[in-house]
Image (cartoon, rainbow, N blue to C red; front, top):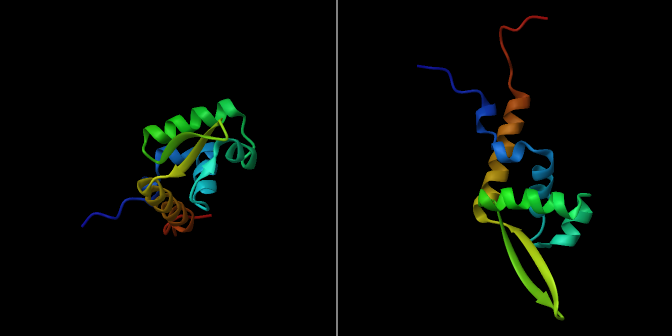
Amino acid sequence: MSPEPHPRHGLKQTLLSPVRLSIVAALSEVERADFKSLGAIIELSDSTLSKNLATLEEEEIVSIEKGRINRKPRTWVRLTPAGRQAFHAHLEALRATISTKYSGLED
């Protein structure tokens, strides 16, 4: 029987970016967020937020909806069900990675 793979293999590559992890963590607390508020909360410029949201949307972690309120354009972002699942799996893999006991290692 082969040993179990190291828990780090369960980390989602897309969420290894601190910026993308911050976006997904913020979205995990709400149903949806508007673009400007999301950028303000995690202290990102519009261009940095836009670039990272494009990556997350490509990976189907977030969905982006455009609309209008009082004739003003608005953009809302939400975690997809798959994105929420990926976020929780990433957190579990991270917890397992940092709590792994390495037997046989010496000081």
